[in-house]
Image (cartoon, rainbow, N blue to C red):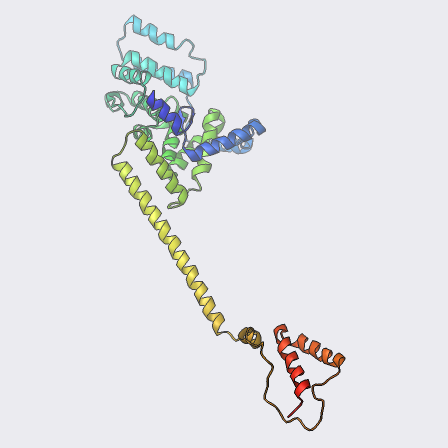
Length: 375
């Protein structure tokens, strides 16, 4: 119960998968669009879809095909009548198509009747609660079992682990499983993509998503929707970006919530610190570069001749008494004693040609000339 509450605090679930924060935002955005578009979102053109399906590297088996492979395996076993009746009860109509997930469940239940190692797996999955560690099952690695049996048991367990947020363990179980060897290849590719997305393995996630979408029109709608969301979410992710650092920190929180504090967590913590230090160093270098550029620009400006030397150099110091050295300008009286109208015109002309702050000094000069004359 406590684990379930902790999971609810970490996020919310879609098809048994606990979504990371960036992906939850994408899901919210999709749900809004879906309500508006009523299924229009992410549906490609028919011609493009047909072309994509022609290039598909995997196929979805029918219920009848899986039942036939099960019958071939059962034929190698000696079963009592009770066991045969149990298996027949699980397959009332071979021709009726089943959803991939339900087909996997029925196959696992049938194998549990036949094979004790399969029964151990099915019992553990059915009775699991508050899972914090992945149990080990001999049936997943027993080479005496046919690959068809082993791989379907691995898929059964891998899906279960992913739904309990044990992403690393799920990826480990599913890593060598091939789509052609399981009842539900769509679920295999979907949970491989989910796991790689969760641990920030960008290339592996995009590869799994691309392969999954080869048969988009045949997928459960939730798989196709989340596949597109994961692709759109992780494709722009750049190494050493703040986005990547935030996701690494989110993964650390997930692992610590599962009581994981081992080497993987310590390595991720060291990676976060190293990336933050690298980012800080880069920002500091940018700041220093901008400061240096400002200083260089200031230095160039200080060496440049001013466009208006008097304005730049003497703006604040020119307001004085107007006293000047007397000059010999002849014997004419009344110099500087112009009629008021003419004197004003001269001052206006000077004001247009010289800066305004010279006006008082010039006017004072003319007044002094008018009062003292020429000596």
